[in-house]
Amino acid sequence: MADLESYDIIVFGHTAFDMFVIEQWDPESALTKEEQKKTLVRKWMKLGNIGRNPYLRKLDDFDWEIPEHVPQDLLTDNERRVNGQLGVSNGFWVRTWYGSEKAAASMSRSGGEATEAAQTETVSRATADADYRRLWRRAFFDDPDDPDEAFDDHRAWHRSFIFDDDPAAYGVIQRSADEDVAPTGSTPDFIVNVLMHCPDQLIGLSGGHDLSHVDEDHDQNLLVMIADRKACESGWVLQIGLNNRGEVLPGRVRSKASQTSTENANWQPEGIALSETTLLEDTEIYVHRGDGWASD
Image (tube, rainbow, N blue to C red):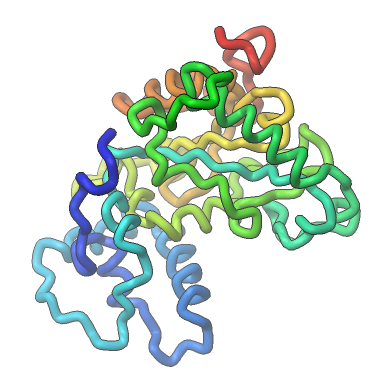
């Protein structure tokens, strides 16, 4: 994978989501710009690829007239370099575990507001950070014990698709390591917040003008690897698949942190879906044996 500077900035008006924004942006809305953006991203997700296809077609004959009220800065320049670039990634790495002390009470649960019980947990942010750093180094470095080894965008995930630095956007309080952060059929808020940075990535492997083959409900469109509480505490990274509407598909996989590159590579070139392991059963499967921190 190349550095960001090697990718051109895709100017506004050249992606399907841009077409959607031009059509849907409401200059009279009482929402803030960021709130309206999130609302549009949610609508964009619910369309599915068949519903998004007309906006792909608009790119063929767009007349370049952008109304003055439509903001063209909803994505940063660096986000516009990689948004929709499946050659960079068609998956995400997301950290959802930041501890559960009271300072983390602003974090939302996957299905809504945090409960009082969840807010009284006492795992500190410092402890969660230390656990995550261990997971991070095991997942992304050849020698996790070498402090001088630099992060390599060529190894696994491009850093543009690693979301691990914002507990308000991505954090989910878990009262135990077994609590589910991404229930089947749901669209967790952290997924919406991720896609606010790269909405065209949702078009995924099944995007394009001929969508007659698409199964909107069951086809895996994106892979998400999640550093949840269990991953950070035991080294077992959670993998989930998203369909074309950003909904969590049945079945999830746990893999050793050291196998992150391999597991990601299995999905990237061929689009090998998790369902080939889980058979779409609503279950969690460990694809390796032994200790989650082990290197083999």
